[in-house]
Length: 222
Image 1 (tube, rainbow, N blue to C red):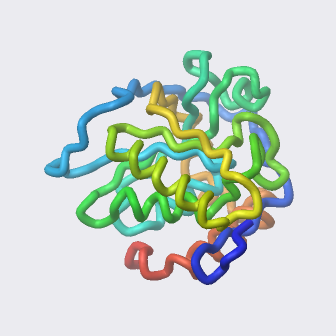
Image 2: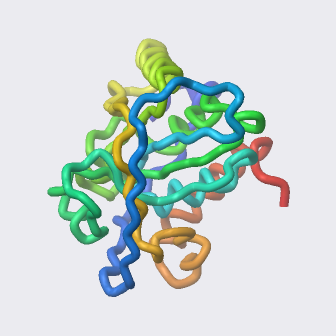
């Protein structure tokens, strides 16, 4: 956790694990990403891929940021093609639950997305976020170009040197690889299940509320 709360704020970790729903219909689509491409400052949109715990939580946070066009829950950095949620939850596919974010760099920068990334999970716990335990919950930044790689490594190094956290950061920084979109029922999960799933009420809602207080100046206009 952060030592210097005036400079850095960590949103509270969840108390219970993501609940599986294997009875839902599966609709798997894969999207192969060029792992390293030159940064294009003239591009209308850019892409960021983060893993920082249960994607029900991360999607509910990042999709509210002004400049974020879409936030899609999925799986990446594994060795099994077209994995299902049930397979990923075993921890044997090598995949991480992640979020692929398409954003307008004229409205929100990669630096600002990184700020939200660092402040909304604990990057010092290996293969774990709160009570969500397993390699699928690891912390990771999967860069799409050299500029993203440089910035991710720079911020990680500076945070470690500053003593912002009590323990060393274990976030992995790797080139983006194939991103597999998670099943349909995972998309906008919090929005669609807030009143039905106890996990949403007990874990996701408190994280979203704290996020909105910390980043109120970066939220989409209602």
